Image (cartoon, rainbow, N blue to C red; front, side, top):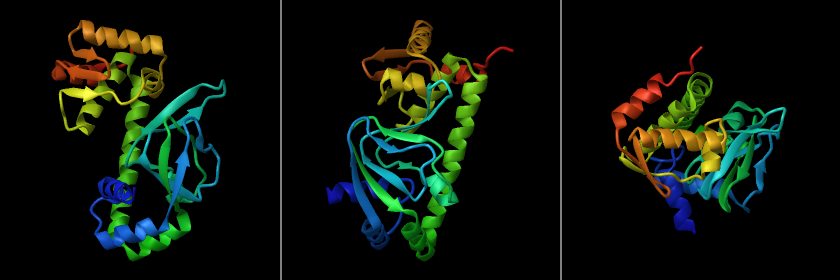
Length: 230
């Protein structure tokens, strides 16, 4: 398992590129945590005393509306961090985090991690890159939810997923349709109709959890122009 942890640290955005001696220091302050499927990692409003890195499993980060409806903000997988932004800003967690699958996490205490940062300037640059990426994700998500119709949101998501998986035309949908609907701010029926629309227009082909991007150019046009009409 130690090899697994080191591999994930090496490939993560936050710790990637650091020399072995620095990774060893990071491992020394990491506290392993196991979460069962459906178990809460933290709740909205909990004190941000530390953050988590996912070694294995999937975690949903979400907000609850006043009616109790979940809006998924992030679906976090291996090598991703959870709760880093509020921890670095010294604030409480602004959302909930729940294990979608059984998870192996590493917890990093804020005070110990900040002491480590002061000795590793290269790690500070990684943190800035991570915070910038998080800001971009929220900006894109707000634009998608407020300006785009569901097919446009879906096209944007599939293109982003293709980029994450190496710009391939055949991508693996690594979350359930219910989770994808929550991420796009819609319901399962509306998502099913949007998928059907993209398939009928021969923009995509779907086989199980695999989706083939048949016409990337038209998908990009839909993602860009699929705005809600006033």
